[in-house]
Length: 294
Image (cartoon, rainbow, N blue to C red):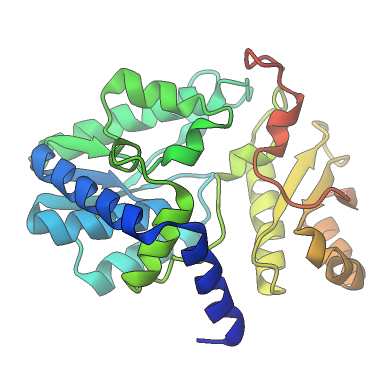
């Protein structure tokens, strides 16, 4: 482990009261035992990886990972999820799902996430119940209750279980416990589907999703661990890329500006910009009023 990783691990553990975190872990195990058999909506991110591993350790063959292959879910993320399950001996299935076919989704209303989660989780519940699993679980944690999260409404309506929230686990505790369990995702940057890169009301298309995916893949390949490429401009040939990286990485992005700009223009962006506020989660929600309307 590098010095930077050691410091990151120390920082994570300092943010979490480990005695409290361990008690919450026991509460999580008890809850999973109560459920009996679970299928976990598994993206390979920090939260779902932790939940999946605890479910496997607790329920063994009565735990299943189910990964949705979406157009707004980069193939690299899907590959990492599949590879993790193979390495850990976790039962896993992948379900192909076209979110652009959901009525109203492509129009990208503020309740887009609700529409997607409602349709997707309905499909996943059908699939896992056919395989004999009683419950579908998802990986939201206590920190997810602070932002605009319409998808949680669908979770509640469908009866999808949220074990991490049931155990009142926060992100810092999940990262600290993941580090103790030697999970590779303990310090993985947060990720949200590529549809979240679009301003509400701007049409989501296959072409634009591919443009955003390529742009973010480039930044990852250049060593930017936490980044977002937001897309603005609905018409053809006038899309703007608004790049978010942590403030500490702004200068490095400037140093790479020619390479980044040339590549993104080749992907179809007309203009390439840098957000001076830097990376922050949910920046597309900043224009929403408190009742969730744009």
